[in-house]
Amino acid sequence: MVDTRTTKSPAIDLEDQVRRRTFELGEKHASAREDPHSPPRLLIADDHAIFAETLRDYLQKDFSVVGLVGDGRALVDEAIRLRPDVAIVDVGMPLLNGMDAARRIKEQLSSMKFVFLTMLNNPNLAAAAVRLGTVAFVLKHSGGPELARAIAHVLQGKPYITPRLRPEDWVDAEARARQYAQELTQRQREVVQLFAEGRSMKEISSILNLSPRTVEFHKHHIMVSFSLKSNAELVLFALEQGLIHANLHGPSDARH
Image (cartoon, rainbow, N blue to C red; front, side, top):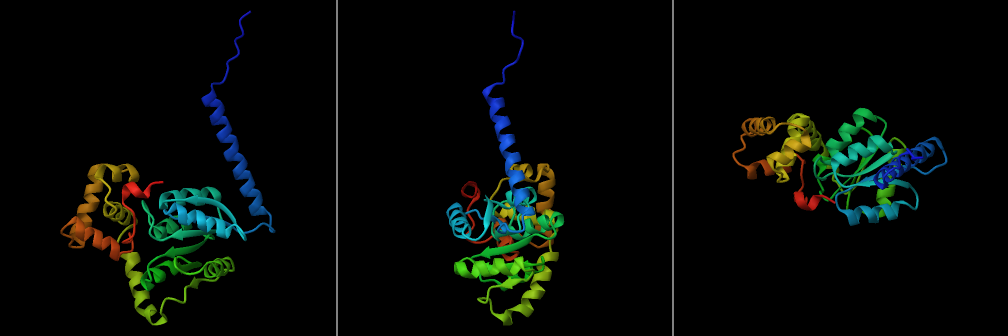
């Protein structure tokens, strides 16, 4: 008699294991959210892997670090999937900068808190960040205790801005922050950032799920609207808008 039972291939068995493990992790995170005695849950977003891993090791003493991501688009996906209490976010990430990623997340998770990290002592960026709600803004060369203090503030529903930023800068910074939020549409911001990172038309089309013709239309409209004459001027414009930072890796280095 012929045995008609089918045997799963090793590949299918592996897929089943991955699905089960993903489900188990989701259940674990859901249980942690329901337990009032569990430590606050953090998601770390930084494209410098060594820095992110060191930060995780430091924070795990007092918090539950549920994930690490290396670009802004991964941050959006994982934040919505994991629903952490706080995201520790590098402002200058590839593919989608930290603040634009946070705006997207806030559309679906309005109560989520953010602590922004940056190398730039820029009150205009800080002012733009606090317009997102209960957030903290900390410089990367600050000490660990200040970061822990910033996390504690946002968990209590209080904003935190590093005292290293001068108070007298804030009046001008608030005006700049309003301009920062209004000059470009979200789609235009994405296009500018990706071109400024040195990505090709084909690559940008794939990332944004747009045709090359549509991407070229957005770029042309931006160049004309802001009187930009070259790709170099586009990069400078992206720097002024806070979409990229001077220490950002190139496209090939940004992927982990």
